[in-house]
Amino acid sequence: MKIFLDSANLKAIKEWKETGLIDGVTTNPTHLSKEGKDPSAQVKAIAKLLPKGSISVEVTEKKPDAVYKQAMAIAKLARNIVVKIPCHKDYYHVIAQLVKDGVKLNITLVFSLVQALMMAKLGVHYISPFVGRLDDIDVEGVDLLYTIRHMLDEYGFETQLLAASIRGVEHFHAAIMAGSDVITVPIAILEKASQHVLTDQGIAKFDKDWKKLGVRKFP
Image (cartoon, rainbow, N blue to C red):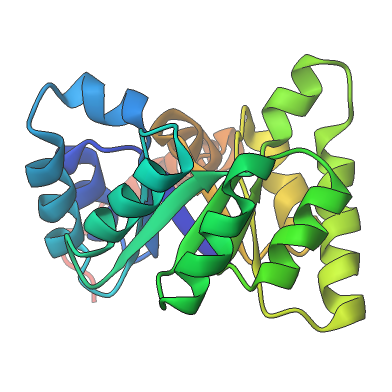
């Protein structure tokens, strides 16, 4: 399972890169606006920082023709860019053409099994069900991960399942159990998921017991 960092903050991305755990980054207009820098330069810097990673960058245009042109331009920012496009009917023909053009796509705002099937049929690289946003309307978002996983496997699609809109560590656990190919995680949740109180308590106990020996050098 790949782990993407859901952020556009270079400092955080660099820190997590050094752990060897991060396989890519997902950005969006909100993330890029928070950095307060030229978005194209920021995207290029992220792509350079993770040259072997997958860097998702979202379109901001709305009209289909403009979305197509912008997607092509975004894809040219770096070799490891994946273009994010919302799963909206107005863009289906654009998505189909971009796939034919060899542009890697991450289709976002996926909220149903049928939407996922349609995007898999078009041959996109990633589909991103938004788990947390389904929970917001009292629909079990995690269930969609399981059903999409079954569909992809049943029909032999190569499209990868990317769990998005992760709101807590419980979503992280569920995405793992559902067999997601990728999860994109906000910094705060990744930090929380990487810690456990019993690990901290265990280290403290080992240190306390070791000091009782009064050993100055070991081994």
